[in-house]
Image (cartoon, rainbow, N blue to C red):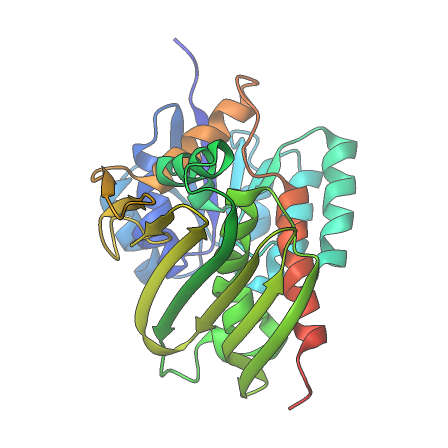
Length: 324
């Protein structure tokens, strides 16, 4: 029987508590063994589903534990590169939350250290592990909707808490760093293309971060329009429009939470076929894929180079936006 890949989490982040912690605990071939937090109150919910969890007061103590194979980093954006590199230097594989860095150039030293150590480090981009997205990519590649002409993507939520880290520019706040990785990255993932240019970038700024972004881009043969916002009612969808049909995803990013994972494929005659994935946990699939990569059984489907390419588009959006 294969030994489980042993995981630790740096920081008791809400997202780690609600999604990634339980996913690591439930994943086949993985074992959640440690958590770094100085707060017993924050540790308690993790111990409810993982009662044997070792609690460390400091992040460095996790890195010193030779029993840990993988470190998951859900810290604020500006700390991702620092702690991912520290974990690599400590001999740990690393799954780091999105976005990996605050600029594309910041990813380069991490790629270099990955290559030097031979360890696995990747961005926790969970949609790359969901079958609905692999199905969309296959349908586009097969020409199911003819020639792709336009992609329309919306991802918004309303966060009124100005004290939240997403409103702190020094810590990588803003709608684009938080969820632009989904609107932009999903278009790249599905089509296999990078934009030729950013043709429009209109950002609403507050507290020094973009609370809403309306972005248009031109690709080879098609265009895309992306909307992200932190001050609009929770909404998400993706539509791929082709010469002979349409593909629509109604819960493209938070599948199973925002709504049922489903794609609607409409052909040239207006006939719509629906495909559903009602019970698929993309976070657990992400952990299992990472474990398989650690064991040398399969490549990881979302590389640091892919994460860097998405960040480069976000960088270009900021550069194209008129000053506010």
